[in-house]
Image 1 (cartoon, rainbow, N blue to C red):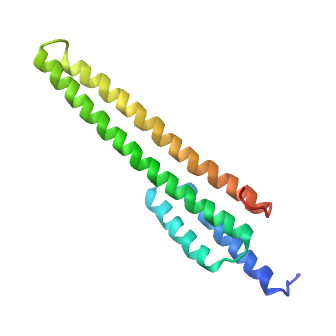
Image 2 (cartoon, one colour; image 1 turned 90 degrees about the vertical axis):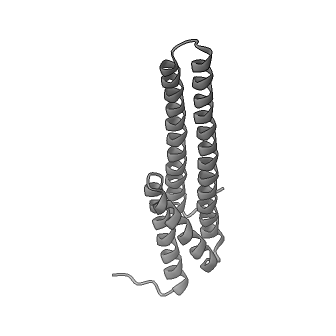
Image 3 (cartoon, rainbow, N blue to C red; image 1 turned 180 degrees about the vertical axis):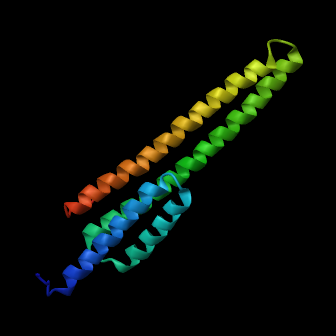
Length: 146
């Protein structure tokens, strides 16, 4: 059994493990938002403790991924709200004008809205997972995130 005498190496190993745990939390957090929130809190705490540039680059990237995800999710929610309001308005105007079947129009708009939300949500999930897997690979290589 080989022991390392340097305390810096031990700290680096602990930091590396913490960062890896945060990446894993992000992968699960792509599906469960509270786990992602817990991951970013850990990233902020670890960032305050860390001084090595390689690890700091990973922590900054993790924090940036969280904020991009959050802002994109909020923007997607706004687009969904506008889409729902548009659906209600179009169906209402169509019903008042007596043209076409309002139920059919509502179904079409709901379907389009749901497809947009599904594609947008899936792209956010893929973004977080890809960024996390890339980060783990760079961490294993001992390289910073560019």
